[in-house]
Image (cartoon, helix red, strand yellow):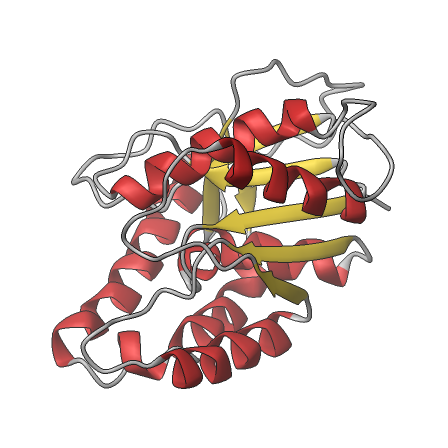
Length: 227
């Protein structure tokens, strides 16, 4: 089983972008940790206390643990301190695989977080550095789509989440102040389902989540390919 770290700029980004995959990986016995870089507040109807209740409920629904790094929402900066903080989490978790938001995004926090994690992956393997845990270098870095751009994903691969779709939606709706109480945001839940349906149609399943990789994937055989 693998140690998997799923990084989100704000609580709910992981659920929206790859919640089905998180649920599937956890159900398969992988050790999945969600790392929230910020608490996502302020928002119109939220508060730090309420948001924590919501992200805790969402994690329980998905069957995973999560941790808050505590960077400032709306002003995440790519700094050495932020890199080392993430590298420490990578080493403590001994992450084999990391998921981060796709680098093209309209939200400055998303772009900054992706850059921080990419560099923290390198920092985590260094010796003679003041970081917790043993040095490690995650084998894979994958990008999920939590984009604010009106842009169609062009993924490297998609993962079937047909069996996980209903649970994913429940985890998203756990964020009541973000996607249930604000009437204009309820459409987001419908859009996510529509998007996952479209991605599923690309690989011959009902629902799927798309991912991008800059590093080539190796296959032992073609037996597990969809379609």
